Length: 606
Image 1 (spheres, rainbow, N blue to C red):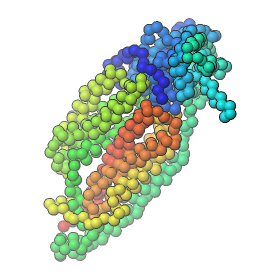
Image 2 (cartoon, helix red, strand yellow):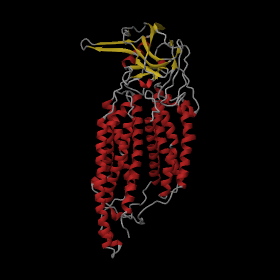
Image 3 (spheres, rainbow, N blue to C red):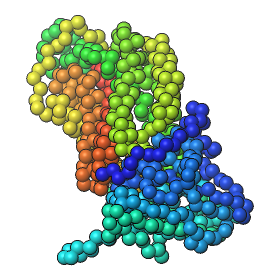
Image 4 (tube, rainbow, N blue to C red):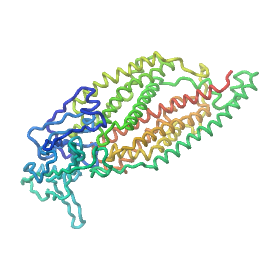
């Protein structure tokens, strides 16, 4: 339930495109160090509030009835911070470097019954606040709630009116910041009459201490009194599970499948030599298996333009995902804030649009496509249109509820400009290069004009069964790791095991390629040459399993609730499954194509 009203007027300063994309003041992951002299003012920015169990449902801090300056001054933010829902504004707290403060009055307030009820609902929903001191986020709960007893039942709600700030410094730099209410008694919000005003006095204390830690990154994880849990460790169960599965699949393809292929090739080539005196039609009539469909296996599929668009966008997201993980491995992202990852993802998406245009147009021309312009439009719209529709719904819900996750109009125009001036032109340029560099399709076998009739297939060779098997096995390889990723994106964990993530990502692609080759072989053995779309759907269905897992995570592994969080979770989870469909479908298709070319090149033909 939303307990906040519409936000007070505020403006978000927009910087030029590249400055906003790369962050203001310093690069992603690089600490913005400010040097202070004793007595220098240290600005504390108030940022946002929201339910603890709904990470993406955040509101401006000044939407609550709290101490607020007469004129609100907002801090200029990077694009990543805006996308992360940050709305930093100057506060009334007066903090000076290395100067302690004891119970200084912040402000006096007279709250109406409606304002008290607003605070009560916020405390009941476990609202927390986030402040920022020298780029260090500090968090705490807005109030205190106690439930005790059954008969009689006790329900107490209190508001924290005093905050203790603890800051550590080394030399002339701030290393650590935290807020505490450990020795503070909350102000009760119970028993107030509807026509009665509640008088409050907000106070705060500031305590400075020197530390031997020279850099913020040198602090041990879990030793910073963090507000959110930091329990992620190297999860060996996920690694062992993935390694066992990939070794089994690779062994299956490399040993069993290649042994079968060797026997098939020896038998077919021997039959070819012994029957060289007869006609090829007589030979076809007496043969069976994947050799008999050699004149149809390279018959181009229907909807070839859509297929090429899927392959192009899938290749783009493969490059995008690899680039994000490599940048994380190089330490280019600050673990405490997700803004740098958001900025990098947008920038890489715009720059990798040339890959989608090149791959799609190159393969489209190879398989005889003639509507080149339509192929480019389809490629550039295959992800951007579903994303825009999903984002429009999610952003509208945030805007209707006054959430800071709703993007300002200036940010929307900036993102649209980046796509129009960078993403779309690069797609067209990549398409032009792909079309001009395309060579004729390399098919080892000639394709007959008349398609061969496909015999009835058993139920276990149907598309649904292939999608179930081809989607479940790659999903099982990442299922344990997927929980930690969800706990990071949709929870309060901090993910730093990027080396493990890169390893699991490589395993996912390897498993997808292996299972695709196996399923394609079984399909061709049944004299079914319609492998083009089947190869995309079989392993691409992993995206469906990921979406089903997101439903399970929402219902059983999280405490998320409310329309705002629910719409965002399922909207972007659906997009995530779609992206995995494109990526793994692309890997699956090109693996099957390489495999099919290999087996038919080694087959003696008339």
